[in-house]
Length: 326
Image 1 (cartoon, one colour):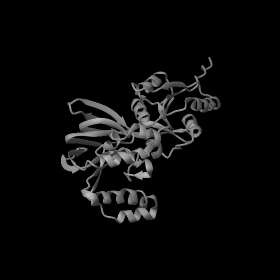
Image 2 (cartoon, one colour):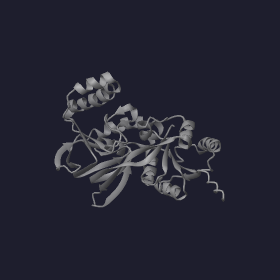
Image 3 (spheres, helix red, strand yellow):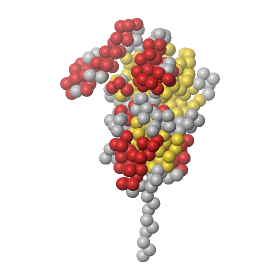
């Protein structure tokens, strides 16, 4: 009997943002784990303004890698995840930006690069859902994109659009405080026509509409307390404040009830006794359609995606796998 040919060693690809990543330091960590784990030399792919990661991830798939390490901010992760959808190639996270929202929701280490690299090569795969959204531009053109955390319009999107890039580079998420103040000056609500799954179309006025695949934001803000990243459904929230009292209700609900009470079993019981407030409306759906009475800023996973007049979000269950510690 002819002996079976030895299988080729496994190989990884690193898609990295050179602005946010110290390649020399990262390369030293990767080489050490490659050697100890018996993997082939990794494929290194540098992002650019023209290709923030999606095309590079497709290049990695064509090179027959087993896992793609996304080393950059939330935009890099989103772009790589979009291209890995349905490919069978795993996504590993090397948190390098200011948000690291997906890593936070998966409770992955945010500050220890060596641990993150080790997880990429020796961890296990965890399937997660992916959101797919088709957006309609003011000129009627359509675009399709993926998101791993959240899509939305209103205050959240205005905040991102108004954030000073230089200030964000210097002080990280504190830059959003300045952006929030400027965004809240626009207190006008937008008329939203929406439909969840196959339900009837409804209309409401809202300041902000967010479609979430998971619910934890930077600053330990639990915006969507019931959201799960692998449950096959979106958690959706509409913010409808009217004046200072309305904003106060929202802050109490999000920061006290969601952020404090729901962290313990006793707190969750107390939170369950509180009445719902009309300034916040929660929904669950696998498909969510929105049309607007005027163009609004739109965001995906913390990145500004310009102005839209409508969008349709569809959940893709277990569309990608993320490496988590074994």
